[in-house]
Amino acid sequence: MREILQKLAETHSLSVDEYERLISERTDESSRLLRELAVKVRRKIYGNKVYIRGLIEISNICKNDCYYCGIRRSNKNCERYRLKADEILACCDEGYRLGFRTFVLQGGEDSYFDDDTLGGIVRDIKASHSDCAVTLSMGERSRSSYEYLRACGADRYLLRHETANREHYERLHPSEMSYDKRMECLRVLRELGYQVGCGMMIGSPFQTVRHLAEDLKFLETFKPDMCGIGPFVPHAETVFRNYPAGTAELTCYLLSVIRLILPTVLLPATTALGTVDPVGREKGIMSGANVVMPNLSPVNVRKKYELYDNKICTGEESAQCRECLSERMKKIGYKIVVDRGDVIINGI
Ligand code: SAH
Image 1 (tube, rainbow, N blue to C red):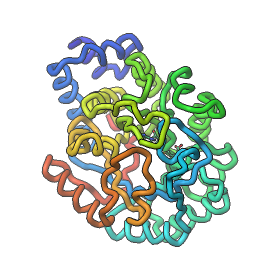
Image 2: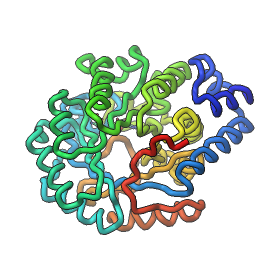
Image 3: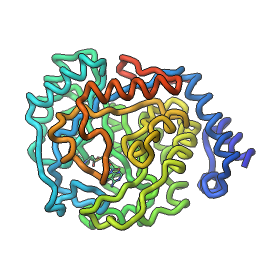
Image 4: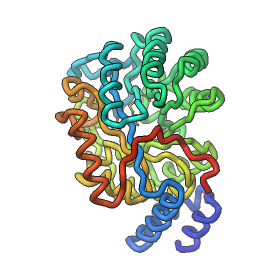
């Protein structure tokens, strides 16, 4: 185990078999060692800085029916909403005052946000806040759409691959969704010059250690600029309502592994991690993560953007979320900074 860890820290690469062993044979001792190695690398590149991204959940209307997701189209008990352009811009203005320099627009695949509408919003945000980065997380779109949005000023795109194993992908999604399409979108986004983020849920139904090892190999070869991982959390109105949630322990372990595979990667301690463990985000940062994504959505829609049950921070004002996270980070010796927080190239 020690040798595998050393090899990973030095070469940033392992075989799928070795990744599998790294996960299945982990002990308290090896976890501690791994965490130390990951934090050392993270400190060398990013110091004790934590970047913040203001997350704006612009619509929970979705044409897709992903089996795990609370806003899937079959959920008839989900109260649907979409934000108007001026509401989104108001969230950005408030976020700017609170020190955010990246805005993440996330939503279901809602045809209302066609290229003109979404592109116009991106342009307006960039016009009023030219020192900010705009990240989109709006699902699968055509090449021409991604190209247009990039031309409107979008800097980054988050599209989790969800799982790098085709059979597993097909068990998490209805047949009209395709593993190849998902992967193709990621390649196109990269080609168009976006900073690209992918990622997977930890502990999703039917996931095996082998699948996770394949995810790690995919991350190693695709080399995303950002990587979002969080535990799967069941939602009562989905097919997977009775499946157990993923653990904070395994999620944090994998955050450390990913930090060693991709030393400069922008790695969030996610809201889902904070949902399965009250100090999950702190644990994530202490495992090698360097980003947190507080909610900037208007308070009245937060409860409606429920991807999974018991999502945290649905009652607080944006300023409270920002303040609370600053305190939490300070307590563990880290500091939230006012910065776009672009990926450091050639950081080591
Ligand atoms: N429609 C966009 C945004 C999806 S929501 C897209 O397709 O990219 C962002 C992420 O939340 C998803 O990619 C998924 O990994 C995660 N998610 C959805 N349901 C979840 C659940 N029940 N538990 C944990 N994470 C979930």
